[in-house]
Image (cartoon, rainbow, N blue to C red; front, side, top):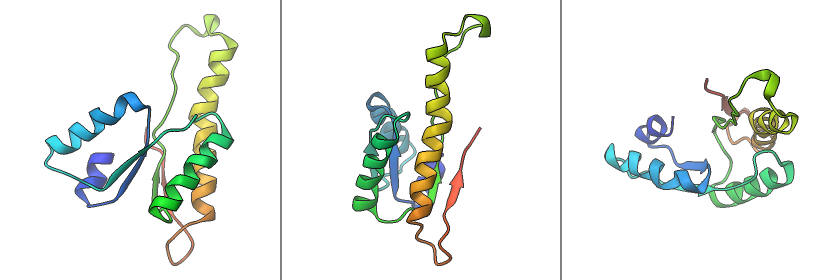
Length: 122
């Protein structure tokens, strides 16, 4: 998704684990792209952490036109042996983080009609 947006010359603000930053940057550069890109870190299961990250993004980048929520957590094991804590973490990351970021983006939408495009691939 970042590659397609970069090809369209979008400015990117990416929330990801620090270990993924260089991989993402390398893929974009390998494709001959050098987009305006910033990386942000936050605990995706924590509303306060997401709000603080969104404060930084909005202060540095301004209102967001397109939000791509592609983050997820996945603890692969048979359902009967899934620890309840892991299930709660997976739900918090996959659903709550999407809600927290979408809510903030819609409050500050930049399009003339006050909307933003919200994408959840997969």
